[in-house]
Length: 390
Image (cartoon, rainbow, N blue to C red; front, side, top):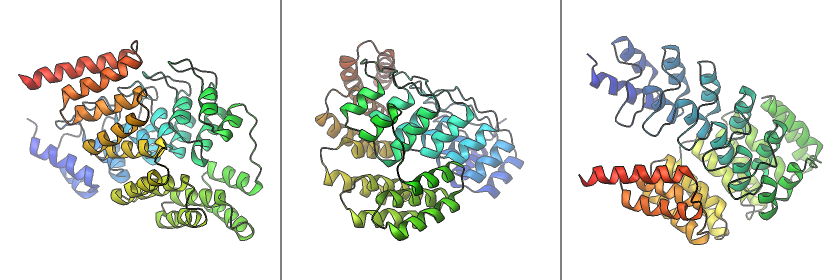
C-alpha cells in the first residue's frame, strides 16, 4: 500500500530542491511517480521550479519523463515552455518524446519560440523537434515568434535560427497569413529581411560573438564583446549580447548590469525591459520582474507585447486573477485577438469561474468558428460547470 504522506513529502522536497531529503524518501519507499491532486509527479514539481539537481536524481531513479498532469503537460514540455534548457537537454537523454504535445497541440519548440527562450529553441532544433509543426491554434514556431514577438534583438535571433533549421516562411495561419505577411504588418523590418533571406549581420564583432555563443563559448564571446565596447560603447546591441552570454553563465547580476547600462544610454529602448524582466525571473524575483514589464507598458501604453508576456508570467506564477486583468486590457485594445480570449478562458477555468470561461471562449469561437480546440474547451468548461453546480 502506498504511503500518501511519504509521497507528498517527496513532491514537496523535489519542488524545494532538497536532494538529500528526496534521496532519503525514495529509500524509505516513496513512490517516484505518485501524482498529487493536480497530476504532478515529483519530477514535474522539480521541473517547474528549475531544480536541475533533483531532476537529474529523479530521472536516474527511473521517473517517467513523459507522464502528464491534469492539464496534459509533461515535464519535458514544461521545461521547454519555461526556458529551462539545461533540464530540457537532460530529459532528452532519458527518453523524452520529441513529438509530444501539450493540450494546445504544441511541441516544446512552440512555447519556447513564443516566449523568447533562444537557447531552448536551439536545444529543441538540435534534438530534432519538428520545426514546422502546427499547433491547434494554427501556428508554427515561426508564426508564434513573429506574431507574439516584437521583432527585437532576441526574437530576430530566434527567427534566424528557425529559418536556418528549415522553418517554412510561407506556411499560413488560420487567417491565411504567412510569417512574412505578419512581419510586414507589424513593421518588423529586420525580421522581414531574415524571412526573405536577405539579412546579413553587418557588425563583425557581433557576428563573431553570435558564432561563439551558438557553440556555448560564452566566456570567449564576452571577451570579444568587451573589446568591441572599448571602441563602441554606445552600441546597445553589444550590451544585449554580452548580457545574454552572462545570463547563460548564470551570472545574473552581471547580466542585469549590462542591460541597465543600455537603458541608461537609452531609457526608451523597451526591448531591454523585456531582458531585465527575464533575467529577474531567472533570479526568482517575481515582483521586480513584473515591475520591469510595467515600466515598458507605462512608456508605451499601446504596445501589447510587454503586457502579453507579463500575463504569461502571471499565469506561470499561478496569479490568474492578475492575468485575467491583463487579458481584459489587451482585449480592450485588440478585441478580435481570439488567442487573448483563449488565454483568458484558461485563467478563468483555473480560478473555477467556469461560466466566465465559457463566455470568454465564445468570443474566440465567434472569431474562429471552425477551430476544434475552442469548441473542445467550451465543452470541457460546461462539464466542469455542471459538476460545480451539482
